[in-house]
Structures are given as structure tokens and as C-alpha cells.
Amino acid sequence: MPHFYVNPKDIKDESFIIENEQFHYLSNVRRFSVGDEIDIFDGLGNSYKARIDIIDRKSMKGKILSSKTFVLPKKNISIYTAIPKGERFDWLIEKAGEIGVTKIVPVIYVRSVIKELSDAKCDRYKKISIGASSQSWRADVMPVYKPVKFNEVVEKAASQRSTLNILPWESEEKKNILDLLKENKEIKNINIFIGPEGGFDKTEIDIALQNGFNTVTLGKNILRVETAAIVSASIVTTICN
Image 1 (tube, rainbow, N blue to C red):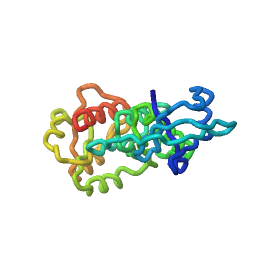
Image 2 (cartoon, rainbow, N blue to C red):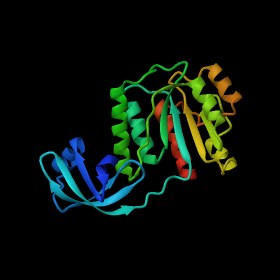
Image 3 (cartoon, one colour):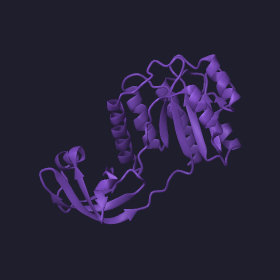
Image 4 (cartoon, helix red, strand yellow):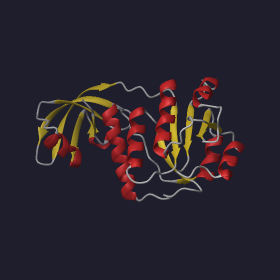
């Protein structure tokens, strides 16, 4: 059974309150009743076992019974990705959250089709990420940031300490992620850069290589943005955590 998100401001003094959409879901869909025990988390890394004591028309209240230990992954894994069209980005966010990705940063590349995100979409992505944490028993919530330009994020990523920057590229034929990880076992931060449907522009590859990025192959098949992102992240999370 999944555990359920509660805003951290609604957990205090060994009690909790659940309102709005989450209240509707727990009360009317999941049919929880007074006296039931549930598992909740605050999105900040804290997870609890709790008991429902009061249910009224608009809220559910109860007591924190105990806290649970949540162990963070050994390495920070970030996906810097072009934004795929439609619900494909929803899927990418959901699966990245489930497998333990630290954060997603949408990137604007030369050949990007989507270059900005509305506040409404960002709110939607946060809900998807919360749902992924609930499903996979994460006690934190993977953030999805506003889009940034490739040139800007390359310099920032290159300046990070203890960081391995990985860039899957269809023209790379020899190097792969597994070999890179074996060569960099002590690295704490791993950034994965996923290009747009039309591929990386030559100038972007040049900039990446100049800043010490590692191009890798994901095999002979050309993958969609969301597929490449999850394949890459899955390899890293499996090996590193």
C-alpha cells in the first residue's frame, strides 16, 4: 500500500491534518475511517505511521504514532532533459520519481520544440512527483525545475565538485554508462543530459566536450527523449544505489 503526502506545515506537535484533494481521495476514494492507521510523509524526507482520529466534512485529523527511517540514495542523480511533447513528459517525471532520481531540470537546446512551462504545468508536475513518491515509498519529493538554457547549465554542471556529467549521444559508439561508473566509483553527483528529438546541435556537443562531459552510447537504436532519460537513469540507479 502506498503512503500519503501531507504538507509539512500540517504535521506538528505529534498530530496531522489532511485537507483538500488529498482529503477527498483518502475519505471518498480509499474509504479510510476513524481508527484506521495510515503511513504518511512530508516530502522533506520524513515518514510516519499515523492514526486517524477525526473525520469531518472538510478534513481528516489524527495522531503521529511513530516515525520511520528513510535512507537517501548514496548518489545524487539529476536528469537535465529536453521537454518531450504532451503526456510523455508526465510519464518521464513519474518514472524518474519512482526509481529515485534526485531532480529533473528541463533544458532548452538549439533544436528544442518546447522552451517554456506555464505555472499550471509546473503545479501539475509537482503533483505527479508527489504521486511517484507515494507509490515508491520515497519520503522526499523530486523537484521539477523551470527550463534553463543549455549553455548556462553546462558551465554550472562543469564547476560542480565530485560530479560526473553524462551525455547520451547517437554518434558515440564505444563508451557506455557502465564503464564510466566503474571508473568513477567515488563520484557523488551524476548529471544525465538528454537532448531533443532532433538531436544535439554540433555546437552543443563541442561545448559539452570542452567542459569535460562524457558522451556515451545507449545502443544502436535511436530512443525518444523520455525513453533515453529513464534508460540512462535506471542504469545509474541500479549500479550506484
